[in-house]
Image 1 (cartoon, rainbow, N blue to C red):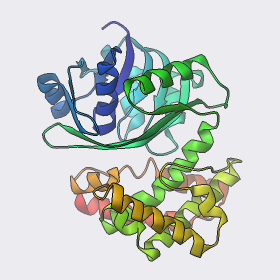
Image 2 (cartoon, helix red, strand yellow):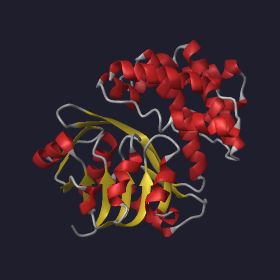
Image 3 (cartoon, rainbow, N blue to C red):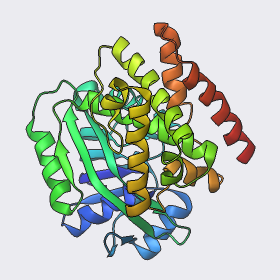
Image 4 (tube, one colour):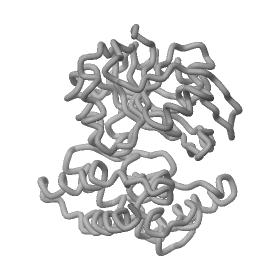
Length: 322
């Protein structure tokens, strides 16, 4: 197949939302998908509802090894087995590669596959849910940040951001994308851990003072690890992680519960994707996310007792539901 402008690896909720918006805006898109999801898209196209109402046709490729090249590769799969998913693409002519997956391992894996000079940092602050019918419910469109890993500006970052933003996905260029990725991860760890253990909608555990305090302490453990790597935490999607690390416990709980009340008012049915996976019987992306930072903490001799405990607990929960 000829080169494409955007190749999107993974056609779950986020990959489908990106693909549908870019196609509607006139960009060349190839979706790399497989199994039943590929069959749904080939038969019915991409259907997105919620914040928008989109129905578009998009080329689907079930064998990634057939992709000759892409100006931009966006990895939108779950973090599980990313290295294996990238392997068939190693010989493709990829201009730039970025991942909107959870976790901190993603940039390293992209660099191993395509060369570090091809890799851009990225983090997504938009969400949706893939329904059994194949329709995607688009629930939040709060932004997608892209940046060079060394913090410099570049024309390729601007091109990608302009394409996404012009297509209707709020996007910005970041000059601190590594700090952004770590900060988002710190917030995600707390949200993921509490969502899976409580199995509640997001607002419910955020509004509970006891759960809010556990979430804050998880964030602070990630912050200690980031500090050992020389990476400052900043504001993050959903949660102001930098502030939560600096204020007393009581104030931190007030901040989190206030955010919970906002979710209750504005997004009462919001659920973290990990909870969606658990309830659908899909494996949790644990080894590649929390497991990865637990191993990092051990190597750097940074205490992370809560992260270690939740890693074991979440593993047990996930295996019990598999």
